[in-house]
Length: 160
Image 1 (cartoon, one colour):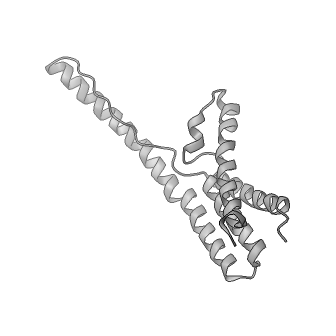
Image 2 (cartoon, one colour):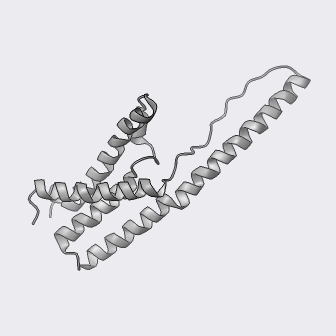
Image 3 (cartoon, one colour):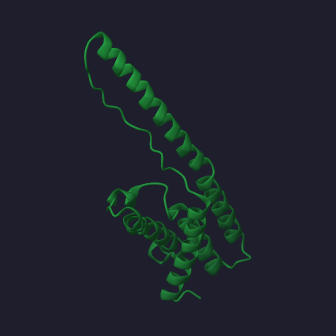
């Protein structure tokens, strides 16, 4: 199988791409602002990680058989990625939010002490990225989207 004919690869890449692209209009409908950076960001609705791995697993199941070892490997891989997206990465984002609050408080106290001693001096600092993981519903919808994408692409490409 050549790279250009690798249905599982293209299904997975389509899953990532479409899930990321969907984030932009969803954000617009909820906030009435366009946020084009979501195209390359982590976290949010739907989970592109989940869409990618479920597209991959579905496409592998279609091409190799749902009883194959390859399908079993891709399903376990998908479960681990989706569990990580909804668990570890989500908690890391929550920790980043708390650390950002603590850093804001620390810098406020530091600036007040500077003003008390020597006068105003502004310092820039970079906030930690808080949107890292996913809510379970984002993972579920991303995973469902991945299955639909793989099935749709398989139909278009006439994969048996």
